[in-house]
Image 1 (tube, rainbow, N blue to C red):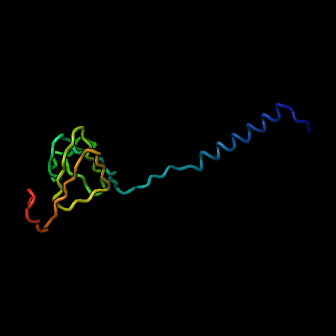
Image 2: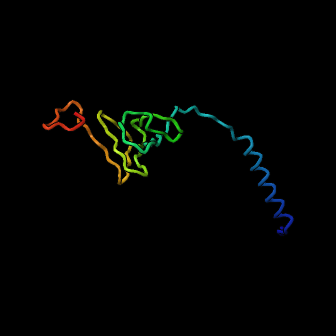
Image 3: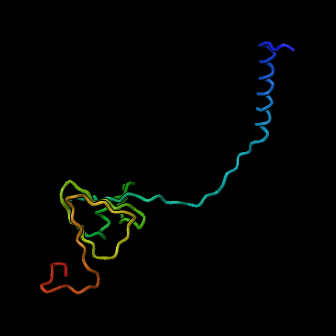
Length: 121
């Protein structure tokens, strides 16, 4: 048997057609139900003013909603002017980014203040 171009073409075409036909029968789409997941958000200090960490009106998340940072969120305090954010209760965030000119004032919760007492006591 001599192999000519027509015979090679027919052989390849026959194999490809057989594979395509088998491929159509074998595949079936399956959908799997997954649990709900919330992605961590970035919540930024939104005002050029000092304030308390617990004041939700001073925070803005990446969806434009005023809210406090949640335990999995990234809290960002980085303004064009220096600001002081006072933290006077236990807080938990996924990560915290603070600009070089910002100040975090940590106020002891339930601890006694020293004499002379600072302004926050």
